Amino acid sequence: MEEPYDFEEKGNNHLLCKLKNTLFEPSTKAMYTKFDSFIVSQNYIMTIGYHCQYVKYFSKGNFILFLLYVDDMLIVGEDVNMIHKFKVEQSKSFDMKDLGHAKHIFMCEKYLQ
Image (cartoon, rainbow, N blue to C red; front, side, top):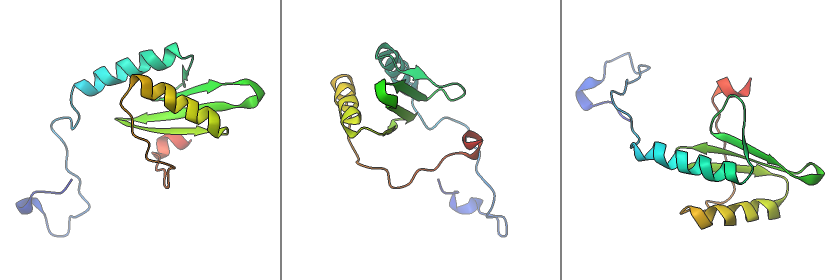
């Protein structure tokens, strides 16, 4: 987001703009509710403290952990085949695009403690 042209204040370029309205449509909540219902039906568990993070444990210590952020998903796991199966199952119910491996992950410090 950029400040409006006449809004810049010399020497105060560290200031932030406060949004008066959400950037996301109300349909975002409906999509999240649908996704949450689906993923819980697949025996994934919402983690404590972060409502957009789910995990499922499998035999031999394998797991799949994924994070949702608006309409993006980060999937973490040790077994590539299990991740592939997860993506196939998701794509049956949701329109998805695989963007490949994450090159950078930025997390809020609040969630790293």
